[in-house]
Image (cartoon, rainbow over all chains, first blue to last red):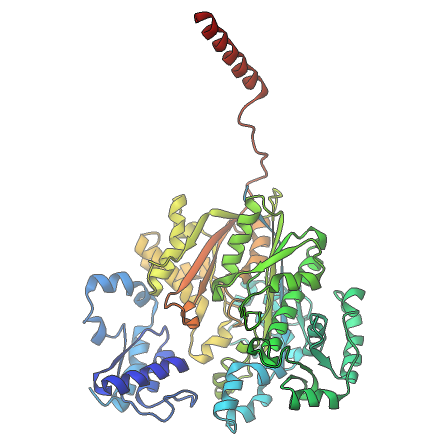
Length: 108
Length: 510
């Protein structure tokens, strides 16, 4: 995850409380989504950014996961995301995201 | 009349020592974690020049392997070589680091590049056999320095060191004591961009038999900025590069738009030529040291060589219509506007829906050239196959528009797409790598048209959260037609006679 984004996530967690933050990802690949999810839960696995060694345990989902998709107005989802969903391997993304949430999320 | 694509060039520069010393992934690591395992391992994962030359995507970039042939090789490609690979290609060349360091000095007009004497003399001999380096360029090489002098510049005056095979062989001095925009780091980055752009310009005129004096205007569309503390991006790379390349009748300017820069620049060039402002406009760009080894950590973690070990450059000549070469159709320009929105769906729709203006279906475009990043580089880094993701999105849009059935999505990506082959140098893979091949494919009648798509992540500059993109169509030449006179001489005589007759009638009536 971009170092500046890590900084912003950390600032939001400090300001609003980690229990009040939900991170929504839009990565095109399961692996990339998993890396970002790990960063905001267990800390930056690349040991480069501000979240290195910081276990925020934030709630994190990919926008195509049912937990988020079901919350979005169908027409908006169709207009903004349906095409992307058509080309993504959503199952792969869910398979990457689920164990990370189970292992590291503190607020679910 | 529409302008045409008259020629292209594509160059790569293998710079393994710059991967270690100038790529931002490595420089950041050195700051944050100076004793890291990654920094210790990296030198053992660098490829030799011969390996880089034989690498299939690199041979494709310089025109020795066509995209269809590359697509036949099973991925990954880093463990396969092209037989009979050559550093010189149909469109350009792959230059080794030592020759490039000399080219940097040729491009330096402020005596900032200092080179160690024995390195300089040895490499100069190599360059004498290079077809592009004439006496004018060779005379730009300065006298060598003792290594102690170079060490002093590096250790006491913040000069940026230049290494070759791990040895200190020169440096780039700072151009000002206090101005951060002229410090040695920035001067090094800009001279690298300039020199790789110049290499592309030299190849453009050489490979396409173009007369340098005929070039009227150059547009540089790289991602660097040159200027001093009072105008950080003042420019002008384009004119500076044209000077070294010997384009004596040209001026130029710089166009920026992150990775979309080249496509913006090509639309501007086509408009300048179509409007009759200039007859021959070159769009070109050099490479970026910052992106070297960008995904190096992932590559090493997976036991691969560091694959981002080359700088990229290209040049395209846009000229007035000759009735032969493929045309740039400016009636079908697509653009992502401020109001478009930033979802990938909105972006691709805005870029491809320009076809509606001509009543065309998505399938009416034979090939789409998108972000042509080499998947060998991006897949191990978790970023997937970027061109394939783009083709899937265009295919998904075709499904939504009713141009194809959903079951044909996979075959759409094969028929209208290609495997990526360009290095991940930001602007370099964006739309433009296919222009050389598409010019030939259209001339040979293999395809009738292509859409060039450039996209840019503007939010990285922190001035806007917006995304950006532009697209245009290149199509077969429709034939040169002389502009028709709208009114004949006889008609003018007839009109004058009628006017005089009316005038006389009016006088008689009074």
